[in-house]
Length: 176
Image 1 (tube, rainbow, N blue to C red):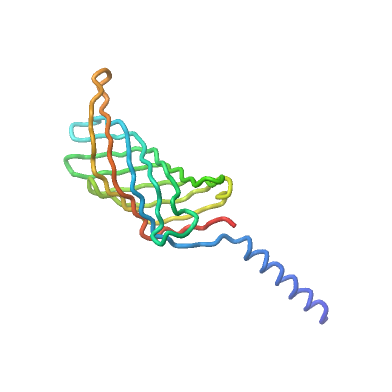
Image 2 (spheres, rainbow, N blue to C red):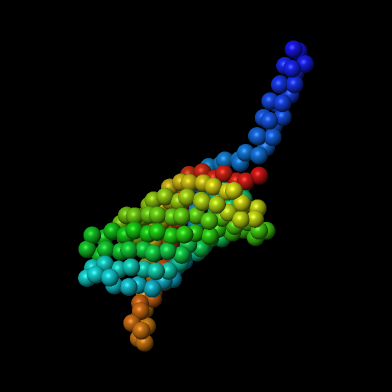
């Protein structure tokens, strides 16, 4: 009986050690990311516009540590602007990378006043060394409209803008 108890305890210890080493490490980080964007603006109603484009930048973790620090990102997406209500909404798919075969994918959805919206950011997976990455948190997006120009040949309006994205407490599970 004593030998069975020792065997069971040893088995539980091995399972605990293997399980804990296989579990992802979760960390909450604050990230600041200046970004730039380009896109096309389409008038879809008298006071409503749709912007189709992408924004990109570099993520800086507040304390300068962690695997996501200085990662580059690009988020292609669509933004709707209502000039009458001064409201905007954005949905984007994001690609985050940091050399050495580290790639993550995320979904961003925000809404709010023109120039300042907030919402959710969810890391949905990755490739290479970031295969198995996940995470979620609030994101705040500040926007300053830049240059707007019209293509005289096709009538498309081109928009360049810049801003700052802030993740005040992004919970990230990094694969081991």
